[in-house]
Image (cartoon, rainbow, N blue to C red):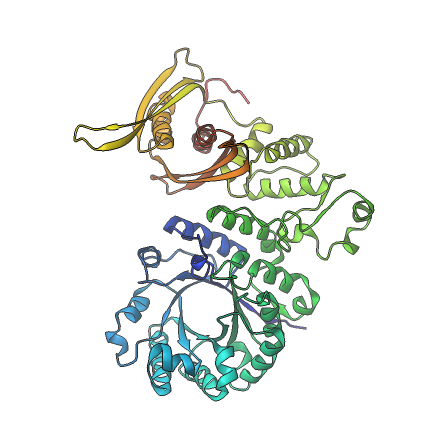
Length: 542
């Protein structure tokens, strides 16, 4: 029996950006978008071109997705203006997007109070805006804002908004539970009634999580007839968040009620990077992963020693609702490391390192990884540091240089103009492998880490040409365990960029001393670059 196509639409880069404390930079957006495309999303909404500089710049060029459609979000044209004379709408049309999703009021109360226009003027804006998007050659969608609230008070008008968009050529008409207050039984009934006016193949669902029902509402809507599901990775979003695609996607693929009826672009192979994708987002927004998150949380498949632990080892299928490997997670039963071996081999293969599960070096690699993770290291985002760790165990990393010592001074003083300034200066003493004499480098920076970075990269002798175009582009700090006073274990994540090749890589360092942690990540960054360039060492030392 053939299965129906179900489309997945991610709004992390817009809805997620509305989360308190989250502020995506352009590099963040590009990185998250790559992960979402690898996962197999059909639509990746990049933001609102024209709303801010980051979103506008993001839409100045196509990200070159493998299969996802790059989608811009914006408003329908303003009432009383033509499409041509609405600067905001024209900004949408100028964007390098494949599709445009327009938001419109579907609750007559908001049309009257928030927009201050007539119901007919709102419908006319919907018709003209959707028609203009279609005419531009882009796929057009309408997000019917507050649809469920509008439906409860004026069903006829809420349906009129849907019909106006559909009749004007919208590929998708999305029912939005904007304030997150609708319950599953209401969603199911209203979706079924909406289907009398818009075909299932054109109807989508977009729910918020204010009653902790966003995932349930999305799944109920699919059962009722919606064929597009919108949400965010990890449920990120304003207030209580959005429908969590990290829970929705594996449910659709792994639960027979949905898997037997529907197919998506997310294949079983792509689904195995779900946990990785979830934790990359956590690193980008600089927050600790939620340990008890369904499917991807560290505790999602964890069991303490006891009756369940022994039973899981004998018959895991009856104690786990899905195999943890299916979503890239692992079983955590403290009497076995078999799940760990599988995961580490899969991660190595993802990075292009071919190792068999029964390779005798894998246990040593797993032990090294566990030991470092117990100290606070996290390699979910820091692929470069993970690859270095793995290749060191495999004996594939030369010792290009060794740092004998470094010193950082931070001084607050008045400059020649009488202004109070803070100056950082770093000194690094390095031995290049094979050279008897050390190299000394001194550099100033706008902070201690910047000064250290500049000093370390200032002179690496024969390796200098390899790192000439390398620069530090991002730096994140997380406090892991608080101690007395200002003592704490600190994890630092550093992102480096090669201006010549455009490549980016991330490295991690951990220490009670933030400068030590930062320096470790900087040293890893340079070693990774030298390794990837195939730089030669005079003597190979693992």
